[in-house]
Length: 257
Ligand code: MG
Ligand code: MG
Image (cartoon, rainbow, N blue to C red; front, side, top):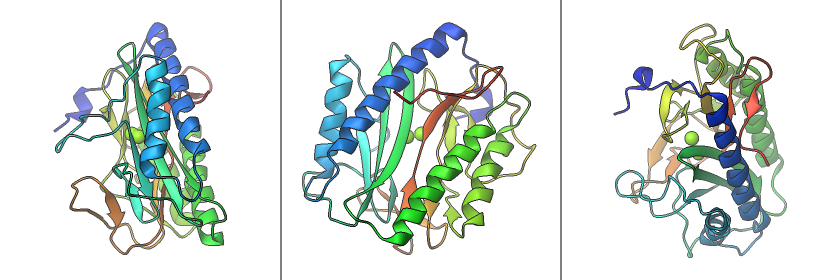
């Protein structure tokens, strides 16, 4: 178990600069995976593309070997009702109309970047389009709250309000988190909460904010592979994530090119 409250590390400018570089590499890896998204591509193909980018920078993913059973890949790739943590497989082919989430981590000079996106495969339904827009919109609304003087509860509440305002649901079991020397540090940042509650945000805090959104209900279950998390009712899900630093001024998104 992580003692979230005890593991909040404030990063100095030199550390933030390294984390920004980690974030650029992570963004490049995700872009490489995104380019392959088309009917017939396998989830293993997407993982391989991201992994090749990490390797070209001499980096590895903190996902590989994580947890138990040890996660076997550098990315998680999750289709439709799979919310997060899908294990890439040569047997899972993307189909026209699917939505696919790719989550990638990078360790660069001892610091972690963590980011995810969800995208459509070819033409997708109006409902799927709306789900992607709402989930990404929730991430943007949450990033806006990453300012000194706000609390983690403001970030959480922004996600919940945005998502529920559009008629969808946020997960209760999986959360955003501090990120830095470890993939998971404090503070824990759920996708639901109350403004003004939680941990006071200070410059140098770096947090992976990650709305995980379900169309039907907030309930999830884990598949027998012990990793893939799916919506309990089989409804569509989406996931967007950025690692973001609190600064004296505007929030700094670390995981962009
Ligand atoms: Mg992630
Ligand atoms: Mg994360």
